[in-house]
Image 1 (tube, helix red, strand yellow):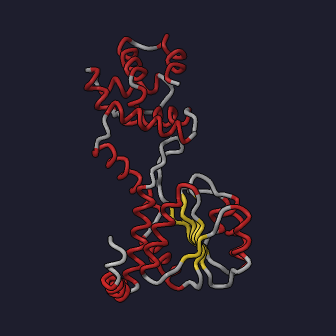
Image 2 (cartoon, one colour; image 1 turned 180 degrees about the vertical axis):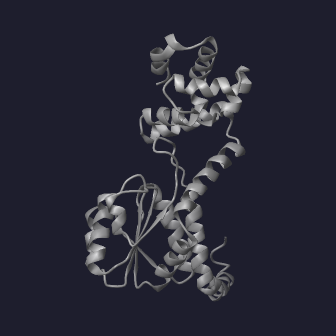
Length: 278
């Protein structure tokens, strides 16, 4: 994309502008982590000159250029991973880089998710009759962690399979049951069906997603947003996992920390330690 932009504007650029554009094209894989101050230092060009440069090529600032380049790339899992690894190959997989990305994702997440929403989610789970879980694709790991942790607190989840098999469970829905649904990147047909029928059956729903808008979101009783990255970026599950941990801790606190179950668990481990070692 940068080459096309350069060809369009090259006749109108100054000598300094050509140097800036040349550097950007040579280091396109680093573009998403590049800052104006770093560009100024590497090229020995003033920040004022760089600031004027963006408008000459049709952009307000560096961030707008980054966004355009991201959106021009193919949005396949392979291309997202390749793009991310290409950036890290040149800059190194540094804790600083990863931490900066996660901090941005966390900030975006917790602007959308309030403490009151987390309290409500914990209360819905604790007060539900039966709890049905649908966690497909990349969210499967989150669903497994949630199921594993809640079982220790005496809360059982019924896992829903993908495809038409969901109907076999849906016939058992009763008022007061709860649906825990995951819809990252897009809302699958199964989630749409479960949201729709859940309302008819009187089953409230909690939807975990990285989408901030959409008709389906309004059908859920509670939406817990978790940022995983830009649309064309590699999608990290780190922040959704953090959100899940916080929810589990909320439920555990409300249940008195699960102390009674924890004591019973240790007794069972001691009793059968000779048969199963861990």
